[in-house]
Length: 226
Image 1 (cartoon, rainbow, N blue to C red):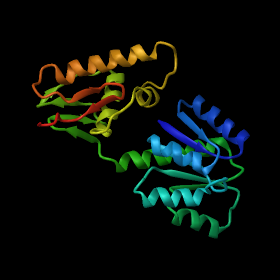
Image 2 (cartoon, rainbow, N blue to C red):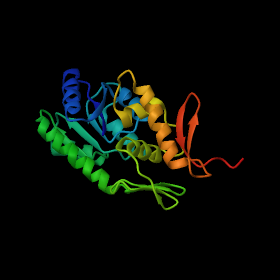
Image 3 (spheres, rainbow, N blue to C red):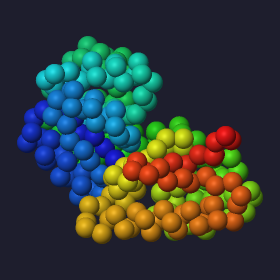
C-alpha cells in the first residue's frame, strides 16, 4: 500500500513516515500543497494524509481540486482545528475522514485501515483486458478460460499493469508500487518478473498484451490494428 504524507511540519512528517514504514506501508513525503499536487499527478496512492494548513496551496484547496478532477483517492485530513464548522468544511470538500492534532499514532493507523477497507470494498474485484482476467479477491488469473498460475510478485505486477492498462508504466513505477525496494539489483529483478509474466500470459497466445516501450517502460494493451 502506498501513502502520501502531505504535512509541512517536518518533524511530524518524518515521524509519521518512519512509523508507516515500520507498519510496512510505502510512503512519499510532501511539505507543501504544490509539492503534494505534483506527487499526486505522477503517482497513484491508496490513501493521502493531508494537512489542512500548508504553504503554497492549503489542504482544502488541494482536496477540492482533486475531487473536481475526479480523483477519488481516500483523503485523511489532519488539522489543529476541532470545531464542528471546520470538520464540516473538510468533509464537504471531499475528505474521507478527519483527525485532529495532536493524535495518537495508533488512532491514525486505525483510521487508515478503515479507509483502505472501505475503498477496497467499493472497488471491483475483477480486472480484465480482452480475454485476460484477474480476481483481486480470489487471486485467480485466466486467459481464454485457461487458469494461469502466478507467484505473489507476478500477481502484484499484473494487477498493477491491469489497473493501468493502456498507460505506459515506467520501471520506477514498478519499483515503487510493486517491488517496493531500492537495493542495487532491483533493475534485474524487474526484467525477471516482466519476462516471466510475459511467458505466462502471452507465449501461448497469438494476440500479445504485454508490450515493451523502449526507453519508457511497459504497457498492457491490445495491439493496434494498423
